[in-house]
Length: 364
Image 1 (cartoon, rainbow, N blue to C red):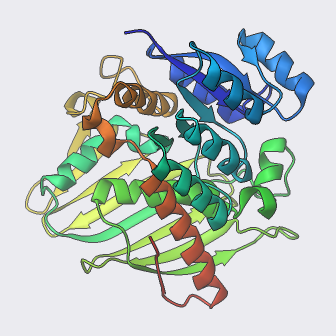
Image 2 (image 1 turned 180 degrees about the vertical axis):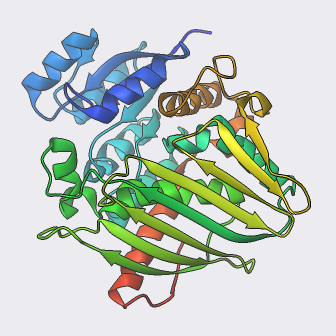
Image 3 (image 1 turned 30 degrees about the horizontal axis):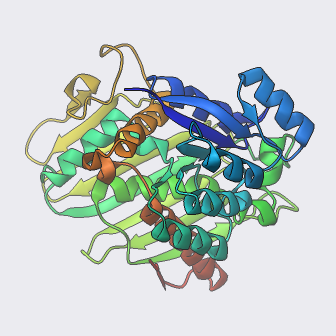
């Protein structure tokens, strides 16, 4: 099949996540990047587009109008801007019937999230959110094991996502906008906390009903959270916890998930992403590797490591199939519901912390 024609908003020269999306989109040959509004600076946008050999636009407004009118216009667009710039382009492309692939979190504010939700629900196009960790092979295998009852009834869920790169005041463009509440919306809970929330939700199939949060801004002068300790209660009776930090010195990208049930336990860690530890209650622990992954979400033989970029690529590969009307994969690609759930998590955590850790219901 011919590749899906892809556009991009944001992601110009020097932008980190835009390059990641471009690599992921082209890894399996299912997308071809043909157009972009790559920067709010017209000269930088044009220069970035020239480097990539694609059509350039000065704004996403111009891009929507022009591409929707072309017979060979884009069929999908990747939005890789800071959080506060997700809503307007996402809504515009959805209204034009163009599929939207958006970096997480959904938006910076509940109002912006609602703008996307209204456009998505009224559109015939799909909205996708790139929580790449849930597309890693052994995370998908963990989900399958939970669904088939390998752990019995879930009792405990623990997620940690620890980084140290924001242990001081921002010294880079990537750090600077994340510390600005007007652009990021929230701090660590938005940037990496939504990943932790979605990962646990994806694997367990459960969403906490209430939470109690303690959010901290540990770096002097910082006005967004950089460390969060959050206790979770599930309607099923299970308990859980999330520890998120971007001031944990020495930690690079320490995402981990542990789930304990009545019949067994699972443990997965991002630093060793191709190993999943399954511990049955009445037997020895088993180390599962990518060779046992039933979702076949890999490109190289077992023992040839895959990781972060391939997780993004798995999402793009599934998105291409969904755009071509293969609805069987919809349940494993995050979309609007995952985005709204992440925003509800942020709001509940902020509300709880403002009330000294009071238990707060997590909205939908």
